Length: 257
Image (tube, rainbow, N blue to C red; front, side, top):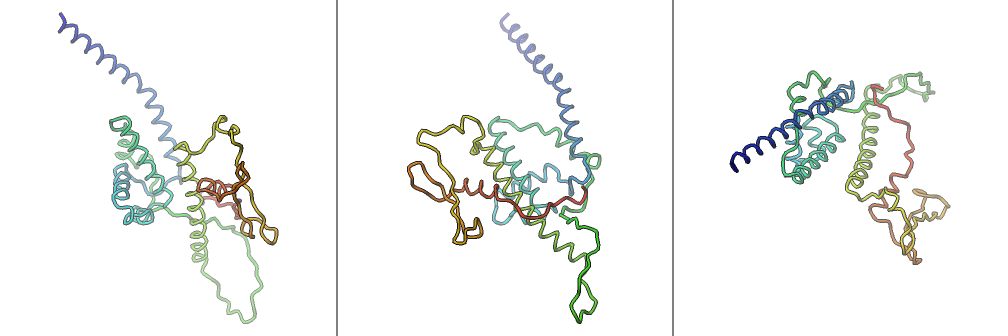
């Protein structure tokens, strides 16, 4: 009787587990529908990469980061540097999650996208940023002796695009590093973390330069401690200062907007 009870108990446990798996398909299909709706947005992606290619990219960078840099991976896989950073961070988080769970993650959606990429993506040859220039007359008074030649408009567009791409890349790195610290719990955003410490607050003070100017005009920032002493900014505080610094440039829009 004990053996029969064990068999029945195992069957009931298997039926319960299988029933829960089948009942979860409605929610899984809804999540898949939302994901596929996002990836079908036109202009949002360039070269499509399979999940196996992303895993290979992460493996190469992890084993030899000096050789397989972000710039080289972006060139080899024909994608933007911002996307390389995002893929490396995603694969790093997936690896940590698999170690925590002790089993591989569910990759059914990735398998579906890898098998039928043409149904969901408008793939292009490669990714690159193209500046959106205003199409309006630009009249200039040319110097005496001008021979009538002008610069190639495509060359001008390429130079402006490269400058904007570098600005967007640097701003992306600032936001990415901040988000990494936020996910790691180093950025305090809960109301209890903003309570006054027992020893008192630390204040960031900006000292004016010799000409009474701030920032690049000669001023600098430091931290004033509750006991009256001061110290230089640490890496976290420098990151906050960079995020708060206004970016004096025109708004950069993607070309498909």
